[in-house]
Amino acid sequence: MNTDSNCKIACQLSLVRSTLPENVTLVAVSKTHPVAALRAAYEAGQRIFGESRPQELAEKANVLPKDIEWHMIGHLQTNKIKLIVPFVALIHSVDSAHLAEAIQREAAKCGRTIDILLEIRVAAEDTKTGWDFTELMQYVRSAPFARMENVRVRGVMGIATHTTDAEAIRRDFTELKRCYDLLRPYFGARFDILSMGMSHDYGYATECGATMVRIGSLIFGERNYTRKED
Ligand SMILES: *Cc1c(COP(=O)(O)O)cnc(C)c1O
Image 1: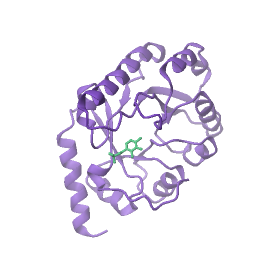
Image 2: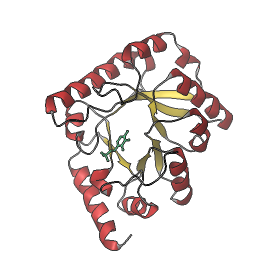
Image 3: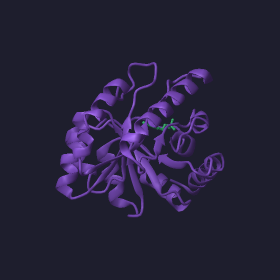
């Protein structure tokens, strides 16, 4: 990676930051991008990075500075949890009881408490992952979270329908905010993260109450998916 592209990342990062309300946390989504790109963002002051593949996340964490907060934002298979559980700061993509309970088991083995978000499905496409909100409420009411001593539920994550229709995007983000407000009483004061909004729609997300946005291509440029899914 040459100086030009480092400069570009720093510029894009400061551009994105300048558009975010003060209380909104930026997760720089660095999946598929090389370590040098993350280093450029780090040197420009970024400390929170989001990755979607456990193996890639672990490899990058291994070679980059230790004060980085690593967020897992992609679909997580239970057999990959142990790759990230020793150091991950937040898992955004918890979309089933099975996964939450598996995180609990691995976290207990490490003697850590892991912060998680509940990923809720609101998008029109049925390819999008996440809890059905009605099922999630049933699970939350059955109180197994209360027994998970090593898992702390910090909030909600979601992805809006991929469309240019602003009304449809706002509808999805408004629904996520509604779910967040309904869940909040069950989890108390540390339940304070509403993670929604990506490069193309984060402006709507912050209007609708996002406290955290996940932005990749706007900072690092387009991704090319040559890397095998792990
Ligand atoms: C890749 C990804 C993002 C970032 O997407 P961009 O369009 O590059 O900003 C955000 N959230 C999730 C869950 C992702 O997988």
